[in-house]
Length: 370
Image (cartoon, rainbow, N blue to C red; front, side, top):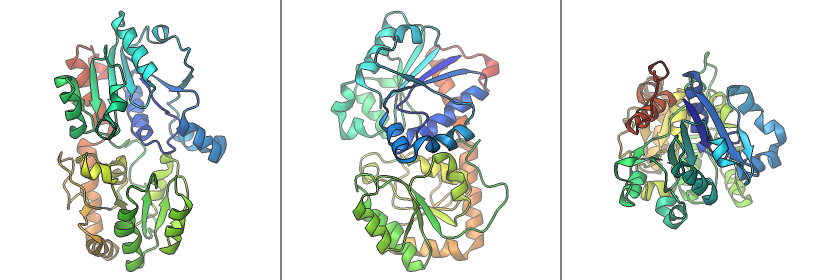
């Protein structure tokens, strides 16, 4: 089949987590023999910021490690009907502009033979529902929502069984344990500061515990204002700036553990939706400790696949245990890897996507579905 995906950016992962999952899914489709095309708008803010900060060198990791992938830059004068004329499946991510979402839906209504899917991987349907309601989804066959809580919003809006829960996952072609173990030191956290919506949690569940246990802490990410950098300095944290996501496995391989500190909104309003870093970290075989998070959809086995710290004191205890207990480290690594390999890889999500398409009448040749 021919898949066309309209994304904010495939090339840039600068403050753009959806690129992680999208790369893995599109690559998996290609390896199964499907034709894949990705379109991203000219001037995408993620790509513009990446180039501003790092130039073309910022794209080297993506290009080197995802040689199968490429994307086409489009302008507002894109001939939608011609572009989609031979597509079998078109997926439109919710970070696209309303005019594009509407134009693609119109092409579907006016005789397009492709299956048309809206893909939502953000909290706006809950936090800013008017921003999502402005999208004209007439003509769309279904919605992919990256969590049950989000899917329920669309069901209340009348989508019924045409909305499907499609969680993110790890691209295990890239995210896997190192071929050869080397010395690991201290915890690492890969995440963006954002708008300060988890600054207190980062201090309680990451900065202070690491300092009290005496572990060197490395942090990678973007959007750290001066006040945030001063906070890191106060705790003796080493800030290493932006990390291309394609290089994350190399960084995980050098560290003793990592920590999941979910944004407050996901804890309070969208339980059951972990950051994609959880999938990626477990796939890389690094012990993970999570701040309080309700795995309401039973994606993992908390306490077995990773440790959960209810408070700052327990986080200190967990960090100390991982530092000193090799059996615990081994158990967490083995169980975390099993969770990813058995149910949370991009290959699993492609299986699910093809099954969803089949339920909507899309014909998938047998040799391409496995």
